[in-house]
Image (cartoon, rainbow, N blue to C red):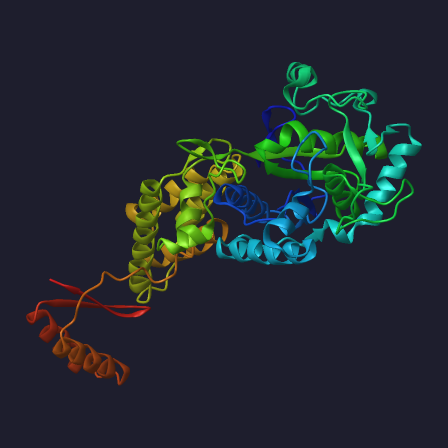
Length: 466
């Protein structure tokens, strides 16, 4: 299997630390608002990665839920996003977190993303975060300011591992943050923030440094290492996490353990609108519910995401979503035809079937080339190289990775049926149930004479006007 590693900037052969259990950590949602479909594109690509890995290995997949500590600014100032959500809706931060986590996983499930082996909430791992900060303090990587405990990035030689030296110099020049008077370096970041003295936060804890709350970056390191150990096979996230969040994770994790933190960094590109990147702050905010309200199925969107490689930007338009919906329905109709024919077949020629499965798997194992894998599915369904029974077997295998529910009955073309036609169909269904095939055939001919074609599928009778 080949994966593009963001740290080395090349595609590499994947060699897990322990083939008996691949470890994968994925940055989860900050649950202060609904996830938008750009966010969900990342989770779809991570699900494809997990499903592809499971063709060869057991996988332990950990995903965090950030329910505290994510400030509105990368400069470690501004309000916590959870407090912002609470003020916006007049609820407690705890209620906000619970509500939006539930909504997130409703969307996650609707898109057929596999639930993580472990879902770790930041608020349930405060002591692990405090322990990590204490370790960094003991090793001399921290300093104190008036508003928190900070990590001194100048003391970590590999701070440019993900972003590269030239880009890091740009960040230091002020491209990323405005320089605080108390910061030693522009790229230094908060490990623990002190609660304000003029008001009480809803989410705060005692610590060796005073009452406060964890920084966003320290959360993922503490939870990832708790469940997966000091070195992880794969760490995933959106491309926007590279320059700040994941760069800081490497710094604090490797400084604390003295070991490499992640072997393969895998990042997904943005979903974009014509106006630019989809974001909550920018007002370009389309949710999965928005698509449902317009009559789309969540899997229509999953199909759209599979038509572009995860490392390329995908432009979202309703025209492209319409095309994805039509393609998915066509696939399901082709599968239904194969199922109908396969009922009369028993022999499966494993040689050709094995070859097509191998082509599909090779596409997915080539850095998750989902568009190429989809092309193999279309080739099988349209090419006729496999018999119907083989086709059904292949689709079961492929859909275990793509998870497009290809065996779902396709949407029927809406046909307004006169009452007498409905009565003929009902009589024919009863005849077939009674195994009176002579009468069933006579009723089928009567329907055809009346201008309607009927065919039998695993999902029952389907009728079309001639």
